[in-house]
Length: 138
Image 1 (cartoon, rainbow, N blue to C red):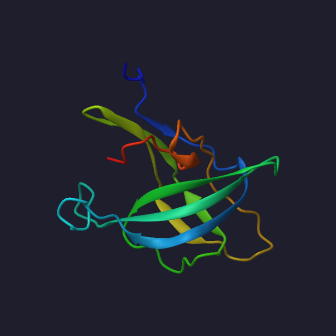
Image 2 (cartoon, rainbow, N blue to C red):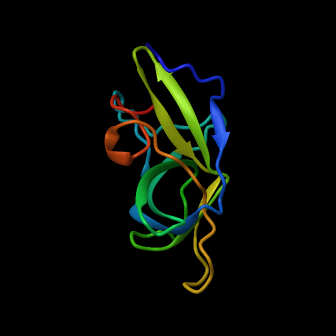
């Protein structure tokens, strides 16, 4: 039976993570069937940045694949980043469902001494803590 979720998009609190770091450099989000780069409603190319987020208590971490419109600049693997406008979005296609994460921007943290301002999220279900269920993303 599908999950009943009245809220399809949920903004996430940026103050909940101690550290946010890029673990996979930005790359285009590609349609698996056609090989074309996916775009948003305005025609901007979509990119994915995988970030590791350390929980505020320092006792755990999660990896989120964050989708954003336009190619982020200055982000490399291992760099600390700031995620702005993060939302968790429920999706369903046929018998598949899950949660993906979107942000308005992912930018390099200005200096190592500044606090990481990122976003809070909770992963759902399976898929190794990557925030989506078996079956992929929408």
